[in-house]
Length: 200
Image (tube, rainbow, N blue to C red; front, top):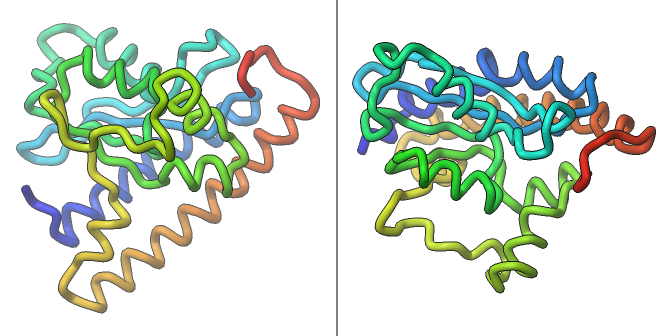
């Protein structure tokens, strides 16, 4: 598995340039700040990217919205899930873990952890649902299982052998965190004003 600086930079590029702009627009409409993308494994080219659209339908989380976009493409343009990387801005909730599984992906990568979602972005539902419904404390699902393996982008950055590479990528993560903090403020304001999302 390639977790080189170039690979990790590509994942951050996709979040910054392909997902975040869609999310920036969506939070203005009252949606949460979660998004996702699908890349081809062979060349890391983007197949599709999308973002949370819960104001349209409560199940359109970022990952589900991305999967809907993927499956709306002509069949000839849809590579098999096993030939793709699935990228999520935030560690997927229980709904999205299932959606990724049922869609046939053998992997997913995420930037922000459940703890970030709860503490930095003030959206505690992922951890709460895992605990209350599945008795899974602290989001401790099986990160490697018969269906897929999940990968924390920040942990791979931490593991890079070259200190300069590590520092450069961490600066990018800090920049993305600032960008998502701003989008979170927009979402939280909409939440105060009221929206149609049941678990907001």
